[in-house]
Image (tube, rainbow, N blue to C red; front, top):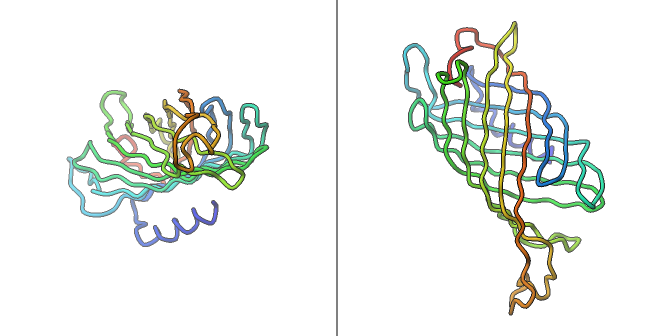
Length: 237
């Protein structure tokens, strides 16, 4: 997964410009009952034609790359281990405040079993600096797991479908850095593990359908954003 993120960053290199934001920090929380904590790194690359709002130029496009590594990952009934999630996506800003976003995630973990999962996200992004007296973003997404097969060890994918909400603040700046905090919430429905010989995984009649279960996830990330651009500290990002 680290190799995949490296390839994505190399592909993004031609787009890196003076507006690029680098974020490093930590993240932790609970994902459908599974606990995790670890470091995170993110690259935000605005580019393309821009429009002007007062004295600030907004790029029309944004490329976002992120990697979350959890050296401490605990799964219910499956024990402890590690996990990693790589993200690649972007935003098409329709105007200075509203945009369409999309991204793909690859999430894998190793506890008493090992598993990798692919997810697609898509929805709306909103940015401002008015209501909270500080720059912030709101993101609303639909989530769907799109690798719905059976892993090598026979574990069936959860086929997650749900919604995702993210609130991202720039809390303030000092010296070389700005401080960002992200709150992320997810709710969704998944399919519990079944018997692939009779639950439809291999085709044919479904005589033992998989059960549906609902759950939620929450995590918080605390990040340093650099380089700092003082005249933009309190403007939307």
